[in-house]
Amino acid sequence: MNKDRELEGRLRELAAPDEADAERRAWTVIRTAYARREPVVPEPRRRRIALIAAAGVAALAIGLSPAGAKVGDLVSDVFSPEEGEPDAKPALRSLPAAGELLVESEQGPWVVREDGSKRLLGDYEFATWSPHGLFVAATRGRELLALEPDGDPRWTLAGRGRIADPRWAPSGFRIAYRSGDDLRVVAGDGTGDRLLAADVRPVAPAWRPIGPVKVADSSAERFNVLTYVAGDGEIKTVNVDTGERLEPTRADVEQLSTPAIGGATRRAVSPDGSELATLARVGRRDQLVVERHGGERRRVLLSTRGTLTGPSWSPDGRWLLVGWPAADQWLFIPAVIDGGASRPRGGAEVVAFDRISEQFDPGTPGPSRFPRVAGWVLPQR
Image 1 (cartoon, rainbow, N blue to C red):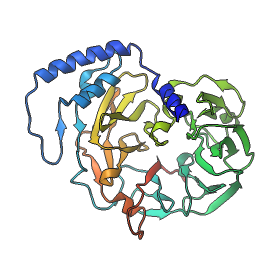
Image 2 (image 1 turned 135 degrees about the vertical axis):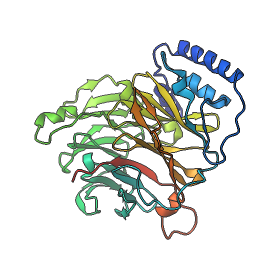
Image 3 (image 1 turned 180 degrees about the vertical axis):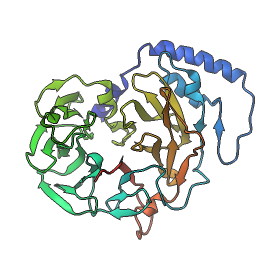
Image 4 (image 1 turned 90 degrees about the vertical axis):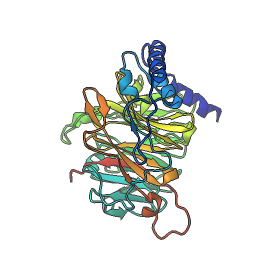
């Protein structure tokens, strides 16, 4: 437990330049705006406000404000449902953007197509997409498998310990996974399995994003850079093909999960790598915050009571999907990159779906575990 707290501290130590001064500037502006506010009666179903006077959101703006940020970008257009979105649709019938979801549930991983149709891949545990949705890597006890999107196995690999947290490299050439306390790497075709590091923390490793890579380009192997957490809590980044140790960047660290919240993913980098979506805990509320890499601008898109899960970007970068277990809902939040900041898309509303647990655990009596979104890709098959 102490090691987990130490690791969480390391992840939180990364601060934006001039952060303290920026916090003071943000607080001065927000405090003045609060003093001048006029009470407004919110709409009963959809609460969108131009200025957040709540102390919790003000505290978040103070805590996150980077140097040079525009306060208006931090505190406006916040979607703030309290006990679930009342306009949520009763069934998942279609996705708001092109692509397919990979969802981990009590019964196993599901593939959800754009039209809302679902296919259960089988009795597997962890799952991850390959680039462009060509395959799915899944685990079952001490087995690692590569599956076709229809569930047919392509190859299997047996490990010495329970296998967890598979992650397919953006190049498509490598898969990293944990086997017991070891971190291992195998080629995308199931060959060349080897130990990368012994005695690692139970945190999913993260590959460094890359640009488009041609399969015929043998030099693509140099792009297989992985970040993981060693047993002593040190964050390490390494080129898995050359063995070269690299200095972890902030972007590398941001993609790691946080042990203090049960290993759940609370951050997601946009498909083009320019923005980071984070679920930030402020008091008893969860905030969905989007910031430009480098801390240029940050924006709060969603504020709710309770705990959210996710987030996941749509392949086109226009939507963010978050889960709301207490309400048993998925919320698709519209967001586009506009002048360096993520903003609600003109004319688009939040799309919510209800009874999510039941839809991914049909026929099971009693409450079901809330499913986890393991990826959203645009298939190129």
